[in-house]
Image (cartoon, rainbow, N blue to C red; front, side, top):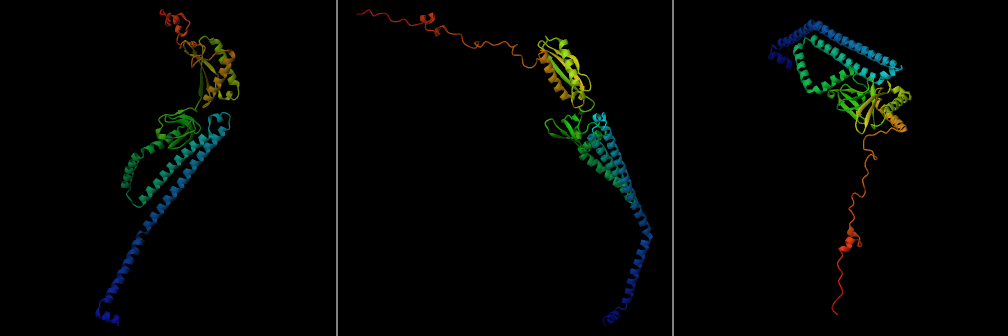
Length: 356
């Protein structure tokens, strides 16, 4: 048989087969021993990684839940204050809600980044990985990204501080330097403003160098009234006081005025006019409306009292009337054929003929 012939030709073949089986058994025994020797290390590492992940997820959930409850409590307190008479003037629910939501979003993101980042580093440490080169590389990469995205970082940090310091909010009228208008949305990177003509301005928070908030505290409505210098100042002042008193008692202006209408006095005295200033403190954002109403009432009161408001173009009666014939040439005496000048210049008629 071929197997018998092969065995007869190579008598060492059985010994090689036995050696191969013995080597395989030895390798299996070594592998089993290596697994038995290291399984405890693997089990400990796996349990440690699982414990790190579980603790990180539970801690992240608890922190985010606590922050969410804190933000909800802030919103409820703002809504409760808004229900009162004074709170309706001082608290803007939408502004407070957006501000609290933005702060809560930032805090939740920071908390998640710190907890999960720390858990990731602890997992790498459990695998016996040297973290020093990794941290050094991350530091260099962070510096490079910071230089490349410095505008984005500047916008983000500026937005965070603007929201935390409550510099402005939704519904406020602000002057941001690059644009002005009513704030319709406050973000961590961009602030949206609606201008006076209805346009929407997208202003990056990093570009805002100054903010003029016209909706905080109180506003001032000031009106300059210009009259003739011959008017009686006491009479004019009494009329203005009466107009201010009537305005402070009328609806809805009595709620928009936060003080009495004051006649501050003369601000300018010229040969042809004098200017008297009237001012009053108003609710934030209501100054322009009060100024318009005050001008309307002052004009009607002055018309009733015969007080003339001057300014702008000169009055028609004060301007001397021009002679309509001043631009015409003087009539010529030669235009009339019967005038002495025309007769003197007429040609001499020929005399009678002397020849017969």
